[in-house]
Image (tube, rainbow, N blue to C red; front, top):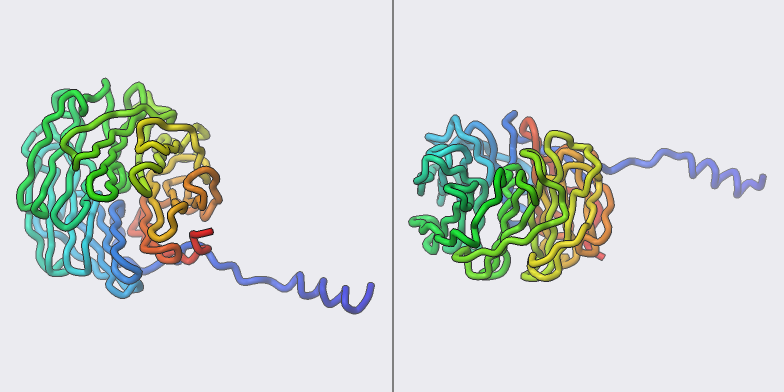
Length: 345
C-alpha cells in the first residue's frame, strides 16, 4: 500500500460530525403542541393543550402564554400575521370550539366567537389575509360546518351549501396539525376528511361560499383513517397526506397528489412510510413540500413525486418561512428548528 493510500484510509475513518435536520429549542412547556404559524425567519407562533400559546420573535427563544378562559381547552390551530397579531382556535364539542385573537403579542386575548351549535366541533382555521378567513368543523345535520369572515374575525357568517358540504356516513375531519384546512391566493380553500367510506378533499374557489368534494386514493373506512392534511403550492398543484393515527407505522398509502386544484387525485406515497399528519409547501421553493407525523418527517423537491426521509422523530406539524428556515412541534412541548438541507433544487 502506498503512503498516499494509507493517508486516504486514515482520513476516511475520521469521524464526521452529524448534523441532525431538526434542532430542539426550549419551549418552556410540556403541553402537546399541534398548531404552528411561521410568519418570517424570526417570527413564529405555536399552540397546544391547556390554553398554551408560544411565540418567538428572534427565531431562537420562545415565550409562553396561557390564554385566559382557555386554560382547560386544546388550542389545535393558530394563524399569525406578524409578531403582534394572531388568531387561535380551540377544538371540542359545542362551546369548547372557540376563536381568540391577540393584537399585542399575546399579552391580552379577545374571545371572538364560540361555536353557536351545541353539536358542532371545529377543526381548523385559515386566513387569506388579515381580514378574510374561514373556520371549518365536523358535520352538523349531515353537512360540514363552515363560517367565513371578512373583518378579521370580528364577525362570522355561516356558509349554507348543504349539497356541496354534504358528509358521508361516519365522515369527519382530523384536528391533528392545524392543516386539515388550507388556503392559497385570494379565493381558493381546501379541507380534508376521513372516517367514512372514502377519504376526501373539498375545494372552494369563492372564499368558502360553495364547495365540491373529490375522492382520494388514501384509505379510510375507520374512525382513525383518512386524509389528515392538505397543502397546495398554488391553485393547481397540491398534496394530501394521512394514514391511521392508531398505527403510526401502518404500511398503507399515506399520500396523494393533484394537478387540477383537487378535482382528481393520484397515489403519491410519502416518506417516511406511515402515518402523516401534515404536509406544507415551502415558501420560495415552488416544488418543495415537507410532510410530518408520528412516523417522522420527509421532504420532496419535485412537488410530491419523490421523497427523502429527514428524521424518524415523531412530530405533529411543521411550517416554513423559506427553503432554509422552518419549525416542527409535537408531543410534550416539543419545538424544533430546521437545520437540514436547503429545500430547493
